Picture 1 (tube, rainbow, N blue to C red):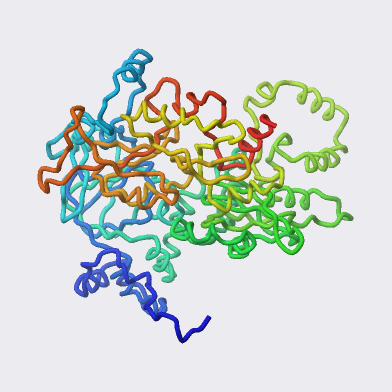
Picture 2: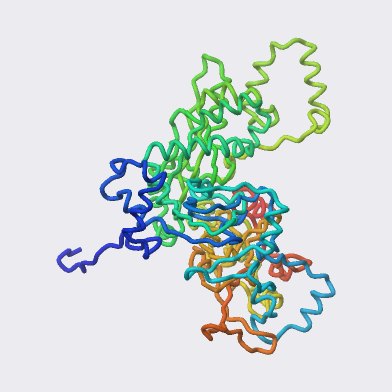
Length: 606
């Protein structure tokens, strides 16, 4: 390439788009006079990202009023909040969806579903008035404009504060940092108790503030004390650990993150790279052939398991939340005879986009964890080692062990063992590489069509349109690999980046079903979710009443739009209409966050 003919432009920098363009020198100076920023040493920060620059570009000041819902339990977010003045309440008791402006959709009865099918509205995207705005229009329970932003206020605020248990946070206290740093759902709803001033800090700024050692130590201590024991107890492998052993694991566990949390921004570019380049660009967490030093637990994000294949690597599986890496090798090395060589890692682990992990050191695993892992949870090879180790037991003990082994699991210990999910053991295929390369492994309910059976009749699309006011929530198009088409329909992702940034929390995941739904009465039509979806599965639609008249905003006179997407036909009595209508059993909604469901589905069809 001839550089003399190149077009010179200025490359966009991250701080060219500050979080709040109105943040000025006076605001920064005021923040620097308050803790924790007053005690931070500016020398801890590099010249390219000074403390004042982080405050100016990665933070924004928010004025809240009593009853404003700041974060909702179950939401995803990419920012934390520091209370500067006033107070907020963290709800210990969960609030109902109705109180937060989310009216749950009730399932239709068969007669009602049939009536709606026979007497469909001729108007696409027709809505009743109650579906356009909240039923409540007073000051407690509606969307209001506050300082040029949309805010939603709690219904029956005074009653909730009186009857529900809550914890107050005052100036200097931080909340939301765990969800922001580790891409996890909010664990509680937070509401402003009175007029309060908050500093919202996006996760990039929060990470930069950790350069101050005191601030970093405070955050780590809070996480280890409050949240790490909870997260460790969620791992099946550790559920029977004695408290003393669990505390030892808590004290020794390392917290590590790899890749970019904003993986969706790079998705389109990276998926077009050749496979070898894509794998080479992914951060290496652990490398094949090395001795394992830690048991790695995936806390969030996704990892690629691969093995050397010629001059490159071949994908063998992918790991998601709760999966383990290095368990079999560590267990073998802990139980092997001294005259046997240790086992090295059989796979490499790489971060796909973003990967957040917990690392339990090998010696802590061997001494505090492995003795409490049940025999039935061990891989076969490791179980044989344990059996040989126990052969020195007395005849009576062996007889008792055999007797217990013949009993049903429920009679043996009152519970059922859970399999250890490692992500390994599945067939090595190009399909795995295709799924990971296109980030389809993010989908909990992906729509997959077997093209060998599909006759292109479009009955699936017609069925979707029949239950969605004449406007189907997907088109029969999408990525194709061999005989499979991965259709562009909402996958109800494991990492739903569409939920980040919604100003009213109208897009949320149902706790019971895992379905990501849009609660239209509080959707303001801003398009944030549609722009954030890396798969382009959310669309904005102008809405009308049953007679065809468009709804318009009373203030601006502009047509009102709402975000629309697949909701898995959550109100229909027979589940997703697309799958039910396929006459050739060619379409399935399937969980791609693990390798097994897709492999098993294909095996049944072979």
